[in-house]
Image 1 (spheres, rainbow, N blue to C red):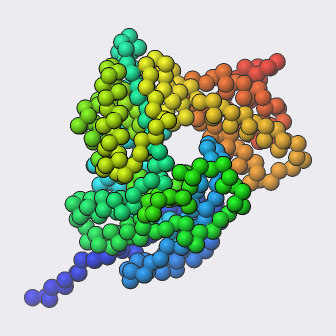
Image 2 (image 1 turned 90 degrees about the vertical axis):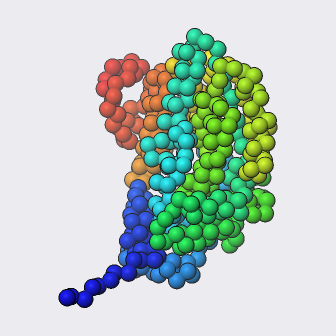
Image 3 (image 1 turned 90 degrees about the horizontal axis):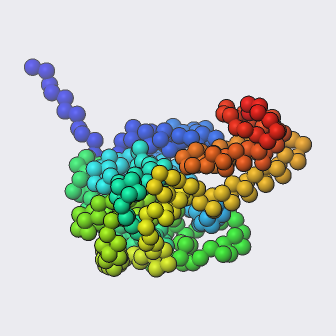
Length: 397
């Protein structure tokens, strides 16, 4: 009788896991400098990263921090490419289990969901609750004050560890918990590298900066894991709204959430209950200046769109940012020659705005924007495969 060969089950994160996370991480990032540098010897780098994780001496590199102005002024922390691979590794292990726990109507960082899905769901809620605008319907929109900067990291880690213990039954459970601990408890402000002058932080409210967060609170905006964990942090809150408060029409994107009801008094009465739950269970504060309660027929602003029954309009902020982009493009046209990267950036930004416009009732605005751009732009930058009635012409552009 042949001797039996026993194959020992792996007890750690595998090299295959690290490679899979790497391939996910580099999607749509192949032209980024840090990705290109990593790709030069990616096999060597990945094996080294895997060995560090196995030995338990993986350390997070200092983060880069900078300020963006659009759509609003915000502080962004960017991790190194190798650390972003670890973020994808963690999410890859947990996302399917998270999906089973989330309610249907939370829209952030979920496959098949997102901003447009959330906007369409709220529009559908308005129609259903108002019986196609025949009956009275009220909409309550709320916001959490300084959400990312207020997340209690100890409480978040406790929730993650409890979730993994109850729901995750794979061989690498201990190492996964260790990686979550490393990422969540990491102090992003320590030894961080500022990619902008200190003047860029002027005008940014302290509640929106990680440098002024309470001790052991706050997660940097920009990390993939933080976006997913921020969604998970409010998961029990979602179930509280649906099950205990009995709100039928409810949707949330990160910390913006909307409730609808035919009973105005019901919505008024849930506000203190929501405030109490957020404070006692999650150490969060409801934003006192962002409580919006109105008849649904007057509309509600959600995810950059003003939603009314059967109609959706973009907000003035997006419209103004689009006009500023047109001015930038006209200045660029005065240059005799633009670099290929400059042209690609302009195309990408304009296409992004037209993508937003395509999901709203904005035909007249699109026509206006195209007429604001002269023939030099269309000949030099882009070809548009659609018809618009341009001033003094009916040509196809």
